[in-house]
Length: 186
Figure 1: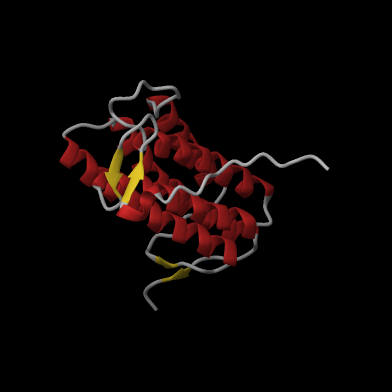
Figure 2 (figure 1 turned 45 degrees about the vertical axis):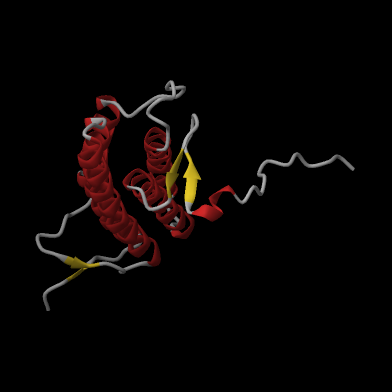
């Protein structure tokens, strides 16, 4: 029987309240940088749940595409500023892709003209949760950048577009399921 390769190692290094950065160095687990990439990770996990709940292949593919964007942003935020960049960072092309995605989806769904209650379907509800988490991630990135005095403006722009993509995607998911979002105001 082949031996499984051990990928993770229990070190206990975080027992002191710190965590390691890609490329070296450690920060407190409640540091603004860690809060930022942790919130990005939460948004990706929320999208994973939405992807698992959806029965629509296009929704699943879009969720996965967005997760990959969040993964890239998390890596960018989680890398020590002293380390060389060994991966692609978020660019204006990534932002444009989200803008195009909004236009594509809006062409296929009737958008509500008022606030709506999330949860018309399990998958649309999960997408709306991911939207709320993505908005928190955007706020955490802003806090980190303000404290650090720098940051990639395309990360901010991408996260800002992400919440709109997710709002439209949730409405698209509802439409594909033969449901509509309920207005928040009775």
